[in-house]
Length: 77
Image (tube, rainbow, N blue to C red; front, side, top):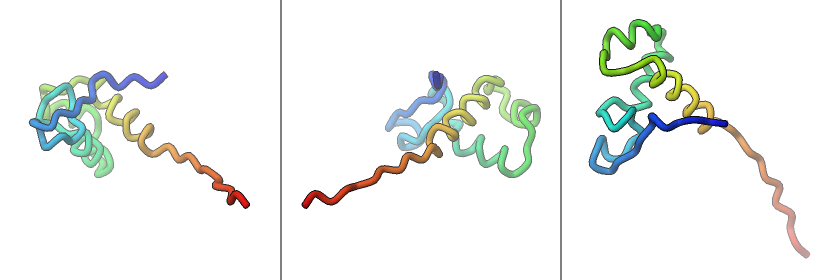
């Protein structure tokens, strides 16, 4: 079961973008750091308010959003 209880969205924080625990650190920022080669340890050092579980949940959230479901639509005659 997917657990994303650390990912929040509030229209008054970062215009509603997915953030970590209501902070002004977005999921997309963390994912971009990882995509550009930054290690989990480096991210935690750069953003001391983050916890290892925050980064794990960012990755799980991204994987969930990337799930592809294909639906076949049949024409009714």
